Image (cartoon, rainbow, N blue to C red):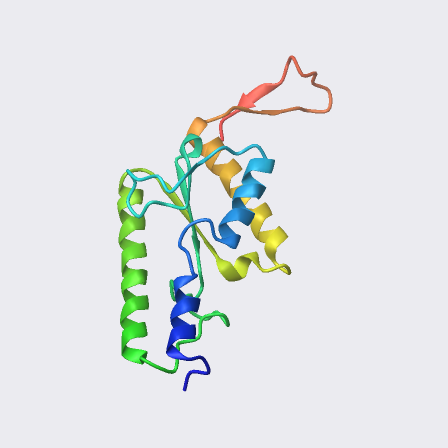
Length: 164
């Protein structure tokens, strides 16, 4: 049985927004501080990704563990009331997420999903550093930047580029 009245529950659920959530803002502030520039909720891309980095041809989805059914996560607990409704709703969300990511991949876009639980204080720094590292690798792969290797006796002028 729900501890809240029907009106209280309605008010709580209505206060939940799909844009500008705290996890989204955390990721956006991190990316901006590291020099990454992005667009928000690009309307022409499937699923209107939360963050779009055109230079990296990458879309970032920041998913709430409950709303997107994060399997195996302690923050995803199926409600005890209206079970059929919630199971169907969460399953539809998961199917829609998969379909949008398939469409984006077929268009040549990289998709990164960050879960709400990955932005909790204990693991936040590791998650964000991993995101930065992944974006750097995508950039290097997409732009075929030459990497130089120096030998002990070589000078910078004599260094030879290596293909990555």
